[in-house]
Length: 245
Ligand code: FPP
Image (cartoon, helix red, strand yellow):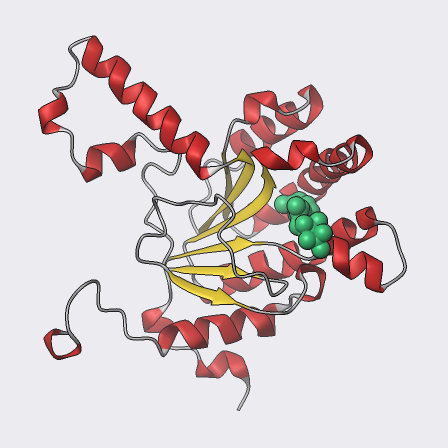
């Protein structure tokens, strides 16, 4: 039996988040510069997006560039930004044909002008699509996001627009950049690293974590299917006992 047919489509995670890791190591294994790994990582982005859309996953969030990634050599940062622009431009038609809406989380105003502009245009051009939402985390870190939300709420409280005593989890979640999206139920990290690396800290409170040794450029739809099957075999208790479920 093929892997896809083992997936229970009634119990799909509504939102899958992915820490795409291992591009550099993949390039090294192939005796090539790091950028070669990122270029091949785009194939995995395309295949994962396609597979999620076909299955009926509603949201796919990809950690494409963290606030810490600016510390990489300038040439690598530039190459990543160029790749982002090229990929978005190349894929926009396919996104529209397949009903995929593009969104971004992170401080995208700090991206280089061309990357920022292309991204905003793609977000605008796909805003009517409803089959799946592809969220790119760019210049993103969860601690930055949480501080931003706190700042926004503190400002609103100071202006008398909200009552701090009334502030609850829902209102806080609505101040985050993922406002309006369901929390990820499945978080995948490739390349054998078992870390969260400042990604969606608030939103993954109850996510199932799935770590695979596969390097991101080698990640294909079968790897995604395997992660979903694994997710569907877990007992999600949300604080309750097995008997209460
Ligand atoms: C992690 O591998 C990967 C990144 C920081 C960038 C991910 C970018 C892409 C897959 C390409 C562009 C993406 C889109 C959405 C168009 P690493 O460089 O940290 O690998 P290493 O840990 O082996 O060094």
